[in-house]
Length: 78
Image (tube, rainbow, N blue to C red; front, side, top):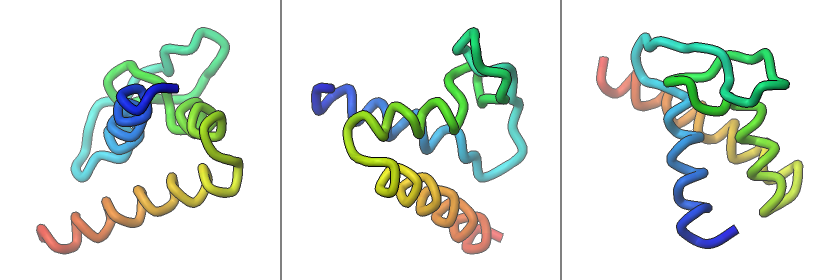
């Protein structure tokens, strides 16, 4: 995965954790039944992609940190 593709992956992951209510639809991966924001890949599928450039533990940690960051942002904006 190129550096640009990694940046795109990070951006898509952040997009899956919206600050405010948002619309979700089915994940664009045909075999997945999870919900995803904007019709993109869901959190689980994006986490699997992240595992391909890191490891499972790091990918899980990154996803958790992004969720926590969004929660903090919401609190700061309230």
